[in-house]
Amino acid sequence: MEFRQLEVFRTIAAELHFGKAAKRLFIAQASVSQMLQKLEDDVGVRLVHRSSRTVQLTPAGTVFLSEIERVFAAVERSVSLAQQAARRGGSLRIATNYPASRLLLLPLLADLRNREPGMTTMLREMASQDQLKALVRGDLDLGLVYGPVDEEGISSQFLLSVPVVAMVRAGHPLSNASEASFGEIARYLQLAGTDPTSSAIESAVLSASQSQGIGLQKAASRTDPASYHLELETTDSVGFASLPRAEQSKANGLHMLRLTPIEPTVDIHVAWSARHSEPLVNSVVESLIQLAESLR
Image (cartoon, rainbow, N blue to C red; front, top):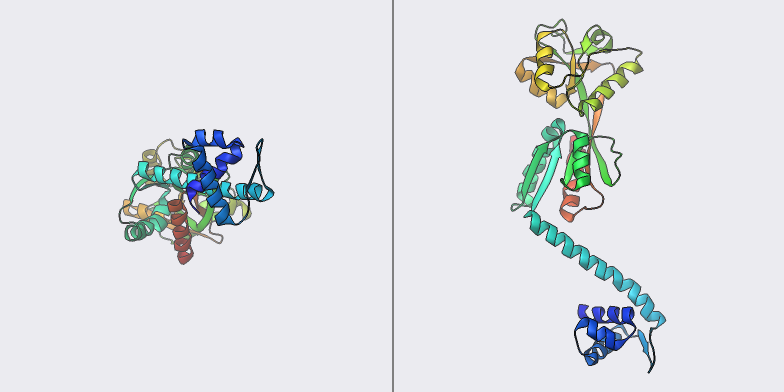
């Protein structure tokens, strides 16, 4: 059975006329008849009933047509995916938040270099909401975001939870401790983050403190990271960050405090377009899931 025979049968079914089918396929009518006969011989049943006046599908032909439409759809999708891959030159566009870049993205890239040596990756650090918008537009292939994800047209999968910690300046009254309760934190002004990704961390902190009946003194949001860190470094305010971000901030002279007795966490999800998912994207998602399971 050849693909060309399926094309001929499909065209006959659409035209219900051998002459029109031949014209549409740019072949002789005799060739149409011959290929249909060969197809029927291969299938073992009659697919088309032909009389001097009419051409009709047999019941078997109707079922056969329905099934081969899946074949044509799969072929068209394969062509589309191949063209997309060719246009992108075998690249993968990934955006991430900071903790995901440290915990997941770096080991993922090392794995991809071994499995896909010819593939290039384009990486960006972006706020979660900006990532989701870019995925919807088709400007990204994968996003590592704070979840849960509730965006139409976007699929997502939970990967892991990351602790949220407090940060204070060196010399702060709490700087000699390694952990602090929300009751101790509540004595100081809390600094809100500088971008939309901070809302996930802020929500986690407020939820944990409220569960203990403790209110926090929230300052107005800072408009840029420089102002945020300057106030954190020069006042007795308290800031919050994911554990990987806080570890990095220790190099800048800030002190990290684990929060007790309930440590807030933020969830990291991998997100991708439900409409334009490709085999490579699906493969990378599976790799991320396996990697995250090994870290839990």
